[in-house]
Length: 423
Image (cartoon, rainbow, N blue to C red):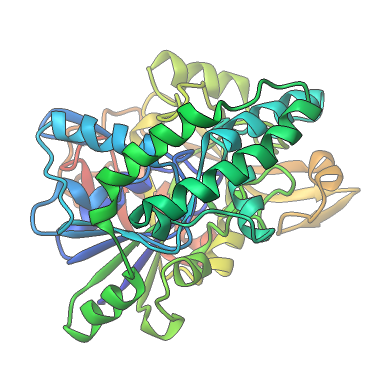
């Protein structure tokens, strides 16, 4: 297959960065098509830990083109910080290997201030955002008042637009009791960032189509997960973009007919960050994983909520995304368990259902229906061939494939690049 979309099948944090990094070897271009620096992908290679927020994971490979697509909202200051950190780790980042869509929207300091203020105002009903300004930036985009990356190449126009928008947003900030964003300081910082980023800004849609016509292979890197999708997720506890496979097309300008393959990534258990219902949440599982040093957010450092694997969610995600294959990560997180539960259905008001309800009130009433599997009680982290997995681990994976209606292609048994097994 030539052009592949990698998406998360849960609430994000499924290990997509690791899977994208693994698949990048056989591709030429890696595209980020949605979200902002509220997402974090962690890749470990050669003992070095790389954390990426806006830059596609393909940047860790030589001779790969990385693209930040039009569907992304990009924080210029945050991007430069990320670039500098990666360069400090020996990663090459130049205008010829990192392109920024001229039509992606910018996340600016007033967006972050608004984001934090709105979360405080929500009180007990807060969404649990990262406070990075993603929602307000997408709101400006939809309201047709956003600033796009093309202005990074036009300093005079950028300054004029910034001053206008800062004055406009400061009125809102005053109304909600938040300190105003200082205009002169903000403009100076953004103009300085613009001078650095301008050489990277181009019409990435044209560049992607030229790559396809030249026979290059494209890999689309998902951000967050299916259940954070603004349309298909656990609304309102979602992000502000389309995190499903369709978002890769609208967020890059590459049409659906040019997509060959979709890989959905899921952990061998379930996690989520922030507020919202979580049918299979289990405190004991969370304590076990946290004590192992696992399940802390790459972006925020927050401890993730954890629970048993919810195949109701995975099955629906496979359908929505048109996933051909599954990549199951973190299988080794279950190594110490005597018994492992899988949620196969929900019980809602006495009725068994096999799909997630549309309303939060209904989801909160759902009771998980579990089946139990015997644990393999063996350290999987040193295994390097799928056939060497214990039979009980293979049995668990076979059941997941059966319930999901998709073949399992890859299995992660540790964070490093060489701890990915081909099923």
